[in-house]
Length: 123
Length: 376
Image 1 (tube, rainbow over the protein chains, first blue to last red):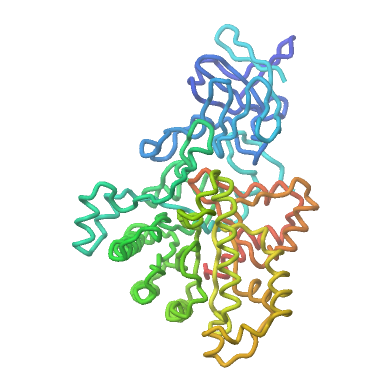
Image 2: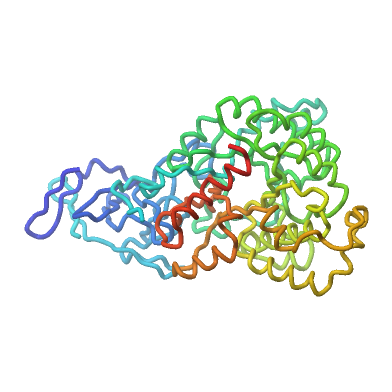
């Protein structure tokens, strides 16, 4: 993924239409793994690794193998909080604060903006 | 120490893909319709095909979904492997080189009817032989431990087939292995060189008892009911002379926890050495004509048992983690297990990201112990 950092410290990471609602994408910005999420058209970004066991949060929304035979068809998901539910163990990470309430553990959250159809993240 | 992760899409640290990983607890769930095809007994088969609750009615009063935000299921959080190709695809994600597959029917022992239970076991084993083993996957042979005579029959029927690397049963509120009725089964397992892998079953603490009905949370039921039964299973087998009569028998306690090992090893030795006189009254020890156990109790634990790692539940500090691994005899006793596809999935990240693991310990837990035990 090619990235470009503008004068405000924002880095272009994706075209907005690359990321379907309800899914995530992993990008590396300045050596930092970032998970970018599209939650019903609203973009969010956090550190990519779950504070529990370092699962890649960017894989949220990935279709399960034989998902149609399971209660939920995707690995992890999003809640109304909004929070991302980790694809491994469903730990819910608040997308505004990066906190997991039950454990008190926290990961980084990053500012995101969309300009001219591009998604930019500030690390 | 491996660094994580140049690739943000990677499920595991990069170094995991260079290490051999044998996974002792990989659940495969063929559809019921598929399994029913392998039921030979026409009476059992007719009921499986026509009765509403089919092959696997659930007896448990509790559901993991109550404990998970959003009421998500626990059994298929990662998906569902129905055919061998599904297993291979998923194993690759998690850097698992050798998944040892079981046909995940863990509520079988809780069902009541022995004709149906035996039919399910036979069908699952025939499915594995026909559909899984030919795809170069290792499997565990399900043994109907509620019926030791039939268990022996099943071991003799399939125990020498390549691909079945161990036998699969359950620990729980069932007859303990100390019962001499299991001796013919142990004899057959040793003869066929099959370690006995006992998984927790869905029959949590005996229900309709004050203790069983008093537990309302998943943490109590899955987190502690299973380790208590696993520990009792181990101690009972040791104290009843199972391994004096069958010194080559190997038992794996799967998903029964592992941090209880230090407690059990020192407590067993303390109690036995202070109160040794009743052991000779156990029917098996009496039959052997022994006055005492032939080894120190904790030696049997190290020499005849293994435990699986999932969930590792490591302490925060590496120094504490390292001490617990040492006290738990991890280098001798631990076998890696993922528990895919359940919500309790445990990818082996801790072996690559925590300083508690050096190269030797990582190799022992992730593959060497299992390779030696199962001859793979």
